[in-house]
Figure 1 (cartoon, helix red, strand yellow):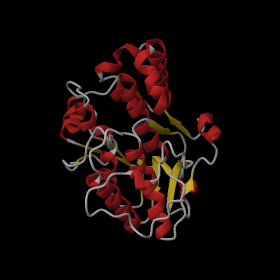
Figure 2: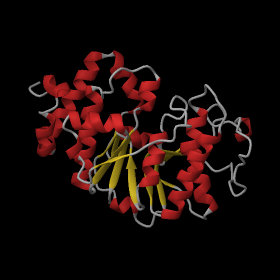
Figure 3: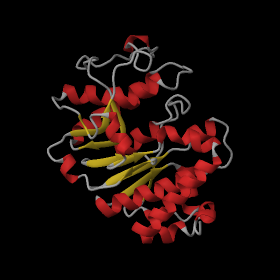
Figure 4: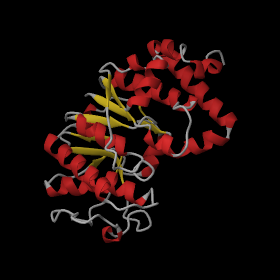
Length: 282
């Protein structure tokens, strides 16, 4: 099963970042994610904007993706500070179904073919309709002319798409079209949580339900995620790595050791990346 990742740098620059780069723990996670997916599931591709493409080429990382690196361009009228994951939607729009979309901070440790059998849509887990995160859709200020599709059921539970499988091309096209339309048609806002998760995690299951599809979850209980037997998702722990250098270095060392023992070809690539030099002989 073909898998793909995305890197969109506009949020990084919008926050005032200098020359674009990935942190050492981000590089180590991505290398391990790509190596594991290729070993257990299939080929990989990276969708990246111009700055990300240049960075991957400069670091010698563009050839780790056996389906190559494909350039993407997110519409200029999407605010990168509000819709920081818009690059994922543009990448998903470009990718043909069926396919597996993987966040760069998520690692899949096993073959997931049986998990995908007979599924139309599968996500890493579902989420509750917490009104602080998923407010009433009527609270969003939208530009003139925008209307929510009448087929949407706002009682459907959201779906976390850190890992997303879609088998149906028409559903994929409908989801990405509606998600990007919502981003482009929303009025200016400083909220960078509720708007983003609506566009990414709430529109998907409503589009699926409108077509008569259920959305399955790899993990029905959050404790299964914490086991890390099938997945490791770094997501919230990245904030720890930014401030705790001891834990950051320990994590990078574990990643490099696992590459060396289980994915020797990717370990060779890791040895060529300067940000990982200090972990190679640890």
